Structures are given as structure tokens and as C-alpha cells.
Image (cartoon, rainbow, N blue to C red; front, side):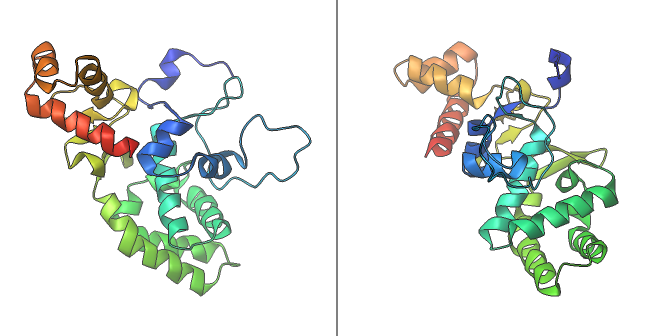
Length: 232
């Protein structure tokens, strides 16, 4: 499929390494969850998995590009997987939730913030082969692990629209409407990456960068701290 620039406006666009850093997920897991394997693998390979999630953009020259909603879905799967929920269970939940909510990205629905546990129960009722143990496992993860993440999300028209990233101490926002979704300092609108690269290019002087961009020195320091945490 041929894309136009307008297809990406307001959607955010990220490489797999971008999403891996922001969600603290391995690139291979991202490929597995969205595509079943790394795109462009050898034609004779027969070990591809059934993807757990739908993705918004087709491959472009065998390169994966993810949207903001793809990234939020990845974050949800990571939470469930790190708490021991099987990928098969997550896949069933995602597929049934997609049907119930009539959307390709069910974990991005506001219902997961306002009524997540009830929605999971509905999902497992639809999927008769899932056990009560699996449901309790996902509900536990949802309450103990996912709920704190949900509090960092904002919604417009019942769909997630912004993510206040935890590594930014409440000051960094990931918004597909700003800077193509790059992490951004909410109070001045500059991408953290922009200020960090300027910091490195100017002898690691926060003051020089602050003077150049006409922002407070602490804004530059926050951007630098965020990017360094992201790279750690």
C-alpha cells in the first residue's frame, strides 16, 4: 500500500527501536506480537507465530513503522506478559475485545480505563475456551500493574490520545498530535530529543541551549534527564 504524508498526520510514527525504548520491550517481542516474526525473514522459515495484535501501517520496503495506538497496545501486552499471562490468552482477549468494541486497537479504548475488569469478564465470556484461572490472572495484572499505567493516559472521543511518560516525572508527554509523536516537554512544546541533541552539540551546556531556544535551563535539564533515562 502506498502511503501519503497525510496518512501519518496525527497518528504518530515510530520505528521498532523507538517503541522498544519507550515501552521497555525487546524489539523481537514487538515483531512477534505485531507480525508473528521479524518482517523480511527468509522465505523458507516456517516458525512464524500468530500475531497477538493488529497493526495500523503495512510494511514499507519490509520496514515496520508503528503508530501511537500500536505502541499503547504493545505496552499493555508487555504488562500482561511480564506477569506471566500466556501470549495465547492475551491474543484471545485482544481478538474478542476487538469484536466487542468494534475496533482494531481494543486496549486503546477508554473502556479499559473506566471499566477494564468488567470488560475482561465480557471478553472471557465470549471466549468459552478460556479458563477461570486465566481470567483471574489477567484481572490481577490489570488491577495491580495496568491501573497505574492507565492513570498516565488521556482520552479524546473514547480513544487514548496522550501518554504522560513515567520517565519524564510528569513533564514529558507522548502525543501523536505533537512532533509526530516524539516525547515532548509539555510546557514548551520542544521534543526532548531536539534539546538533548543540542545539549550534546554545545559542549553539554544547558545554559547555551536554554539561551538558544529561549526556554528555562531546567527545561533543558529535564529533556536531557529524560533522554538519558530512556537510553539506560
